[in-house]
Image (cartoon, rainbow, N blue to C red):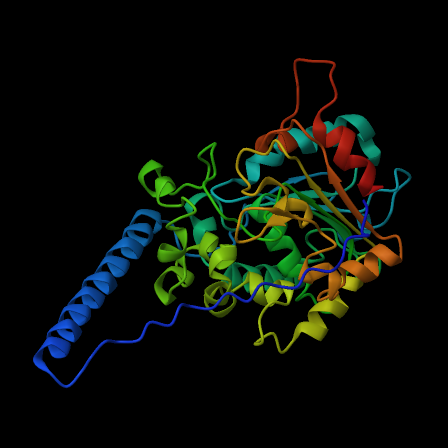
Length: 374
């Protein structure tokens, strides 16, 4: 894609400063008293508003990697973990918000049917299915890193060869968070992100798969989402809060969101950003796929690092802080020919993981994703 645009000067939105008209007379004191009451009412509203999100979403919170936590297909012995004649390494799949490991079952059957006995080892991780996936992403990331390091051999992953990592929706963002924390002992060769909020989410998931329920979906509207998400309670309970990126409240996003600012290099608290960049650059090839027709990711092309500014105007990858300042390695990968970003218009959010079993038509995964895994 064209990266010739001028770099974006990252907007630094500041809160309006209102002077308190308090004088020494009784009128000033009365005004101050009214303002204090209004502030108290507003704080109570914010707390109640956020609590509604938390109580509706809290379910199946415990992380428990049971023996059947992954859906597996193909060889799973350590001696199978090598590049076969198909050129495919072991593949780890990661589902999206409110998703399940079974969502990749048809895709794994497709790969198995295509390559037969030469099909690679495949695992769709189900460590945090359903509502559990609404848990805070920093915790999910750390648990996944530990799980992969502890179970690499059982997953058929060879230390030297590594594996391919494929994530859909929130799972694609979570997979990148894992990659940026993985030590050199475990290498991701090919990383594919399908319809993931790589620059954040700002607005409703129109096809209703967030798992928060219709009444909560309405509160994810752009004018009010920041109220629900930019606070300690939401950040410690809801994954979507960790990457809610409201460009009209950029100061709050950078200060309050507990994943995306640190992951993308927006935050001054990203002390380990150099290590995250080193880890990401160990990936042989990074592929970000999305569609302008996505009915869940909002803005739709957040999946390929395009976004909108505070006025709602589209901003390109080249204007982004992530690319212009190369915060975690996107620009370096582009310069080395290892970065792929593609918009495939007309495809909905779930199209990436659908397989047309009753049709001779090739699925979007087979056409647009599988070639990148070779």
